[in-house]
Image 1 (tube, rainbow, N blue to C red):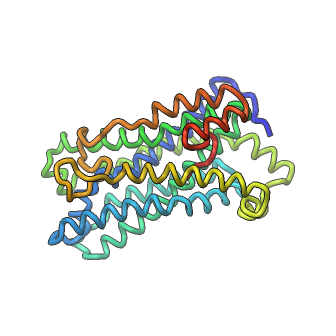
Image 2 (cartoon, rainbow, N blue to C red):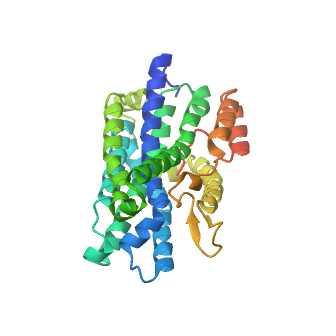
Length: 322
């Protein structure tokens, strides 16, 4: 089914609303890794600092591992009730769970319960991000013509990198303003609490949008999915699911390998992508630059161009990625 013909202004509004929510969700997701060293001291026993840091990194990784389940759950919900309301739920869930991390009592106050609460909220973050990312891409894809889906959904691929940049900027500014000692003691909570403000803005923007025209047409005809999982995995669609899954798993391995790497100052100390919590902890990421190239190539032609873009770029520009 072909997407509607939107005016350039309407199209920009749809893309910006979807991208803004994506950036904020990735901000929420990555400040956890950016503050891994501080979180390890706050929520785990201080007598074993290396074990505490490794436990924090493990919690950071759990958020990635749970994302496919979030995609299953919220993808199913999106097919039943609509794209708009589903990604409003994921955005609100991410914002709330991130803000709650900022108010959890530390290990000295409530003991090991602090780590369990942190673990639960990290699971919620991963579930919501798994549903948000694919949901936002689907929302944009159902607003544009078929031959332009790869091009326009490719804009959303820059959101993870922008989320990292925003998280590092907020942390660096807060730490500089407060001082290192105060930031390590309690100021680290501010970037988490700021999520409530950012999410409120994103929700307001998305509330101004309508449901996708394609979903509205399907709903009007009474053709909405009765059992989305069965239609995805027990039909001819399965081959597309498997192809995209193989590509995305390979891409995820590369991303995971770059997320936790040895510290340049201490080979025995793991380091998250931005654990230094300073601008020096941020390194150039090729995703934004390469996504422009593959988005342009995908938009040059119809499905021929999108298939070649998926092979060359390591992932289909229009698929709902985990």
